[in-house]
Length: 195
Length: 195
Image (cartoon, rainbow over all chains, first blue to last red):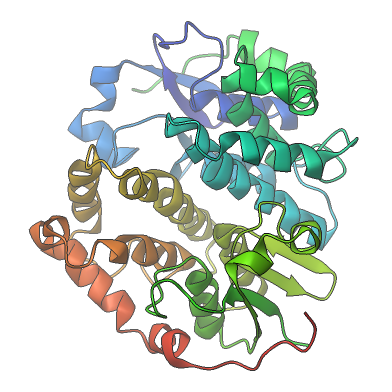
């Protein structure tokens, strides 16, 4: 039985992968693990049964694999990265740093973006560009940390902020060019049988 | 050699444990791992050397253990929880759920609080209270998920929001009553020798 991922039935972005459920699909495509989709509308996410069985906050995404039920896109990507090969390096310290970049994406960069005020965001992007330097990814090979960072940063696509930090722009481009990213955008995975 | 944790030399909260460095100290006290402190002022955190060697965003906390350097409080607590016994259950699925609550604390609850607008916060607190029910902790025994959730929620101490959700208030009380929490607040760990 493949894991089941809850995703938007009619995503507000029209399927361009800007919602948090996309992070989980991309991660599953990176590790090559087949999955089923559970398509849900906003009103279905708000139902008591959904909250009780899958997501106490009535949101997306959720992940169900046998007895294990998870919510929070970061936690689901973390689980996939630890369960299957392909998103974490084998070296112990490098793994810890990959997890660090996962948290940095969701706790330092994303809050700057979603707060709506530009605030610290230009500074953070420059600091991130300094860290990246000429490297392809944040810490050696592509990891779950890059996956989350790219999903966070690509929401800036088309803004002046991203144009002003071309290193970050190219980093996002590299992420989006990955075959697994493209598959996650276009693949129609089978639907889960149960509601 | 014990790990070295960067903390505020003169914490703006006067040492009441409301800054993110406290999460790391509490985690180390829970697992019983001795540590050294590196006391830094705001201006020292902004220095190029600090950014280059410890924290690209010039913030608190950082963690150094031999060759491993980490930033992001969530990632450091995650590392401590995986490195030492005491903050994660042994069951594989329960461990994944503990990590889920770590992300939920920092990515769902904390953004509601730090955004400054009440917004979804009352709803999230009620949903969290429903999830907690009569249980002592979020998922069985105390985990790194509870540790982060309590540090996030206790910033609401004294507000009407917390008074209106007494289950959450008692949950925070239980966290703060833990001996390791109290030690983290009061223990004066030895200072790191190097700058």
